[in-house]
Amino acid sequence: MKKVHYILLLVSMIFCSCQNERSYFPKNLPSTKVTIIRFDQAVLELNTAKDSTTLHRSVEELYDSFPDFMPFWVEEILGLSVADTSYLCEVIPQFLHDTTYGFEATNAKCAELFADINDLEQELNEAFSRLRTIYDYEIPQIYFFISGFNRSLSGLYNGDIAVGVDMYLGSNYEYYNRVVYDYQKQTMRKECIPVDVISYFLFTKTPFNSTKSRLLENMIYRGKIMFVVSLLFPKETPWEVAGYTKEQWDWCLRNERAIWELMMDKKDLYKTDPLVLTSYLNDGPFTSEISQQSPGRLGMWIGWRIVESYMNHHPEISIRQLLETSDAQLILEQSYYKP
Image (cartoon, rainbow, N blue to C red; front, side, top):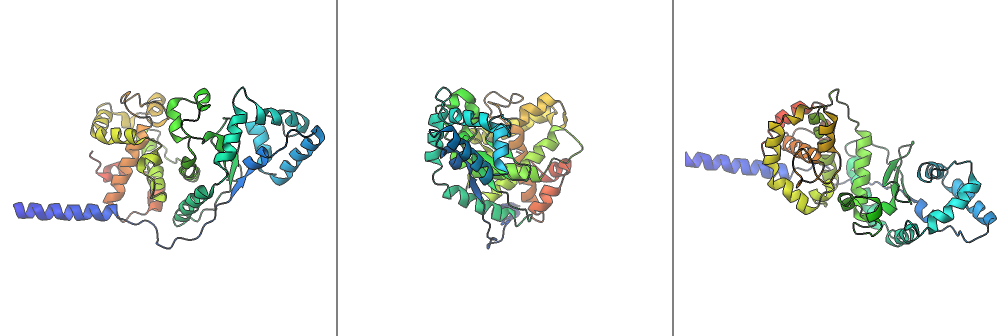
């Protein structure tokens, strides 16, 4: 009996090892070039000390050079009318040189930190190359812009994505204390941009299509996206993909069984109460349904763990099939998830 038990254990170890080494992408990836449009630099290079006529002409040139993005920036970020160019010429110098809210220092920091973006371009190129082996997506253009602490990511009507670079200046950037909570600072770093862009893109391309609005469906939906994002960035640690610190990730691992048992005892998986869903899914200092020592978004984390278990038990399932499977109950049952 001992010998049989040993053989079964060995087979199990080999199976798990094979699952961990499963390759989802071909070795020779298609070449993909992501275009990052530097609207941020164009705005920061405006010489606002010039006379009003020259500044007015420079603003008109921005409209000519960025016909799709300039109207968005003026309306959505500055909150102005596109037609009111005269007032815009009054606002832009204030926006660039204000010291009360730290815009002047922030804009200088943006110019310095984002002078070289080769590393970001390379990561995005590789991630989109992997993604295009799943779906032949049209690659969006990425606009970098100055948001005045207004927005980190935004989608444009044509499918392009805008990144507010002033929201990625580092977790310890002094002016963030005025505009965000401490728990939000973890992902406000330059190196977080590629994962954020790909996650945003996948969420827009893979809409939530379940007819049920239970916590379970929402967890599995988010878990699927984060599982795929982790595969698209194989060099990233899982906690970076999740937007956690390593300490938060380790806390989740240590308490995984207790988290799951509490969710089962409270029957939270099948609840539709918006307050319960918000607690588990929205960003926050902690997940109130579980513990004040927990990180936020535990529903996403548990959903990711369930999906990971499901894929490990079903090597025949492709990423595309996973993304197109809307039956969260089936994924849960066939994941054999038992932390």
